[in-house]
Image: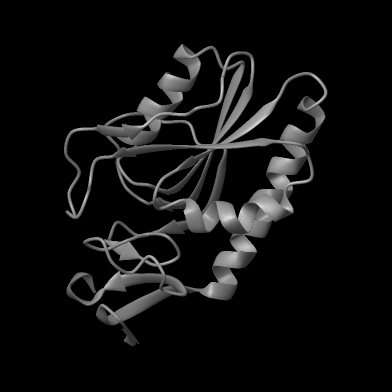
Amino acid sequence: MTPTHLGPAEQLFSAEAVHAAIQRMAVAINADLEPLVPHRPVIVLTVLSGAIVVVGQLLPMLHFPLHLDCVQVSRYGDKTRGGDLLWRLTPRENLLDATVLIVDDILDEGVTLLALQDYCRAQGAAEVRTAVMVRKERERPCAVPIDYVGLEVPDRFIFGFGLDARGLGRNAPGIFVLAEES
């Protein structure tokens, strides 16, 4: 167990492993999206609040012009189980005819990301790609396409590197599992 400000926790991935995963995602995103830039704008759509840390690391590694925007949709709040979708903030950028890269911290059940993908298409996005820092290894109630995955994690409640546990732990340097989940 590793001591954290949330108490003892099991570290699944070090900060170095998370950075390496983001670099791998950036290489793949550059290869896929850079050729599209002359034809249409690219909008990186950050899912608040969890993806702030990921996007802050990812953006300097992307080698093409882009617009940055954000959206805030949540099913968790300060809970460990998802509920109804709560839309707090919608994008300000016009998504019409754009390539949209949704960046989120985690793919858990997929409900939120599927709703975001549908929203972008309904706003006229020409193409929607999705990147997640971590994907839980689990059954999902809906099929949600994910283009870029940083890390695979077991179906446990994790925190760190943007992910929170009951509103805390986003600033933990790595990916951790709560002690009561270990």
